[in-house]
Every structure is written in structure tokens, then in C-alpha cells.
Image (tube, rainbow, N blue to C red; front, side, top):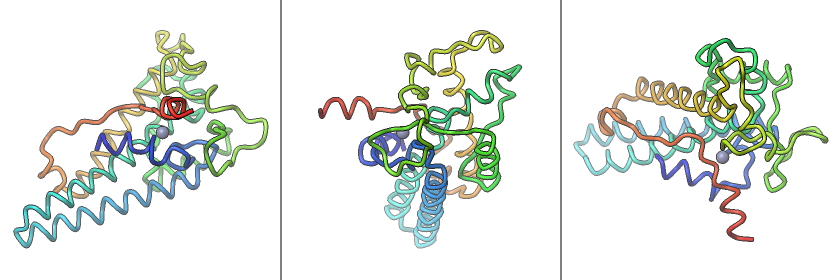
Length: 217
Ligand SMILES: [Zn+2]
């Protein structure tokens, strides 16, 4: 699962949809739906293999399911890091845990994103990503990104939240939403939990693309 999370920043680094970049919300949402369809497919394969007593088959199918889950977690977390959702909500929140979690892999999450877009939700402009859906004059990815404590947006402290940085808020929301995604997946397909055990490890907000790109140039 963690390998899949990193895979998104290398193999899929130029695709806006994998990272909620370039205001490409529609494609990011359909991509997450595809990934969750993949999870369902692999979970069903695992169940079929289990019914035949094919333990090796169960293992292969469950690993494939977790790869798709890792890819979906990546996009889900990037929503907070690469859009202005934190800017729109955190400065008005009285507590960090009162900020609404957005689940873009669900119908209700996609409806919320549509409503938020009407209220000014955008993501950052990345010159190397395609397609480009932001209106011209939009804000750059570098300015909006909250993948680290050191970015312009990441380091902004919020007095209403005990001076937590916007980066910390994005990490909190990304972690909480990741847990919701895993809960949803385990509830739908208990076989995944059965095989993987009680503990799942995932990383939060990992954008290695700038590193990957600069090491090549
Ligand atoms: Zn990303």
C-alpha cells in the first residue's frame, strides 16, 4: 500500500487527476472511482480464490487490492495538500476536529466538492501536469501546496487553532480521511482485513514530485 502511495508521485507524476492538481476535480474524482472499482474487483477475486482454497491466489488478489487502496489514499490526501480547502475552512474553525472531512471516493463527498467549487474551491496550477483546468491567473501549486511545513501556505499559523500551521491541519485532515477510507473498505470487504491483520500502515502527505523532477533536470 505504501509502495502504491509513492508510485503516484513517480509513474503518475504528470497526471493532474492523481494529485488533485490544476483544478482537475472531475478527473480526480473519476480516477478515485476507478481505483475503488479496482479494489472491489480484487476483493471479489480474493473471495473467489478463498472459496477454492487457493491461498496463493488470495494473497495475490489482496496485494492488488491494497495497491489500489494506496493509490486512492494518495489522491484523497492530496485533496487537502493541493487545494485551498484548508484555507477556506480552517481559519473559521473553532477546533481542528470540527473541520468537515471530505471523502471524494463517495457520492456525498463528490457532492460536497461540487458545492465547494461553487464557493471558490480551487487547486494549484502545475505547469508539468495535464490537463490544465484552472482559470488563467490562478494560484500556482508551489504557493498553495501544503505538503510540507516550509511552503508559503504550509507554514501559515492559525491563531484560532492554537497557531497550528496549515500544513499540520492538512496532515490531520489527510490522516483522518485516510482512516475513513480504510474503514469503508474493510466494512465492505472484510476479507481484506482478515488477510492483512488488525494493523495497516500508511504514510500521510508525501509529495516527492519536486524531488523526482529536480533530480532529473
Ligand atoms: Zn501527489
